[in-house]
Length: 527
Image 1 (tube, rainbow, N blue to C red):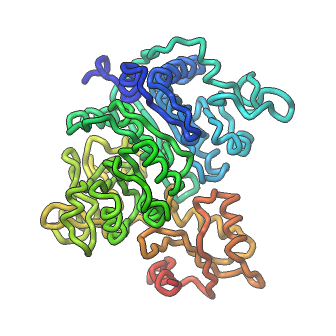
Image 2 (cartoon, rainbow, N blue to C red; image 1 turned 60 degrees about the vertical axis):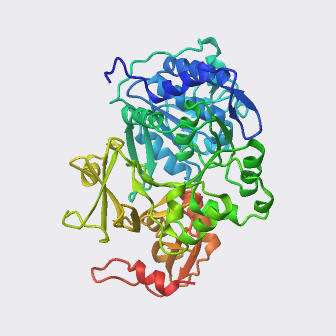
Image 3 (cartoon, helix red, strand yellow; image 1 turned 135 degrees about the vertical axis):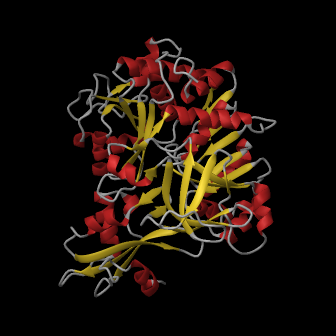
């Protein structure tokens, strides 16, 4: 497909919405229903406004947003304008977000009503040409003026949606090609700022073509987006809207509200990390909830307890879909509902077989491809791999070689071609809401006056959910406690990084090469 013929993913989604303007497309967390035509018109007009404000190819539009219709519209609008999109994740502290804003060369920062409080903390730390709100702002600034980024009546910036009303509800027709940037997603980093993963328009558009070539549902999907639109729920929302379906938004994952919405809205599709599925299984309302509309309950993102997944299959029916992927590779492997049934009542569960257009190899440390049954490092090659780490060519070169991505995961294939995950090569803790690199937390804890030495590591509970633990050698005469340490980390880094358990030790054990022996800590401090 040439650049002249290329139609981007955002353009494809909005064309689908505009072609059936009367259907319900979005239901907000407050129950407000928005038609496809109205939603598309908002996104089109906002795209023109962003172009007028300097957004375009080679620029960045950064979103400080929650699970709102405005956030979705802004993402599509930025895509139409040709700008790369960056989401500022909830749970990260303002100093980290400020570093991200600067590193991605933000041209326009958009803030919705869910993040006004966060904007008040962030704005003094950044220097961005234009800051706008998505809807009426929280009110004038302390000096009575409109505040940063415009002359509107908000302490944050001008209302971009109101300003966009003068523009036509049409595609601004910015020429885009498959090689243009679509976005930068951030994952945990070992040295302060998280790594930025650069993605291009071409691979994202190819995802829609692949899905359209597959089997289609008899009725349009109804997706419940109860986890952040900045993560996989946003991708599934894109697919749902492009296929003629509707998206029901919730601010956060509350298991009781999720169950109520499944019944009330006749939800067909839901994505959840395994620990969130366990919350549904343990909720008292589950037994009296009508789950008959559910067609796909997709899960992934961290290790899952085979016993609890099998329990979920019994409760929800044959609707569970395992998705194995990562930000650097998007999709890697999947396990269908029918395939869940073939693995019996006990033993490990695979993450699935590779997608048809994805190559997966399990390799030894010397690069030799290993046969079935032997554990090694998982490498992936596909058309959906990242373009690289933003402004980090040396790091990119370490994980991308000859078109193959080194995932950092350890796994093996069985004789039937199913892929199993055994461990993570990377020292990464995957918690609900994001990724935590221990080094980031360790460096911060060492600045605490009551802490002399520390080691941070992940601990899995009996349901395979990971939690951040910290082993600490107290400074002389000091006695740090968990609540104080949690408050300290939350204030400086964000609640995502705050340890859930604190262990006071006399010394941090070391391996033979002098590194903290976290395996030994896990064993010694397990309880």
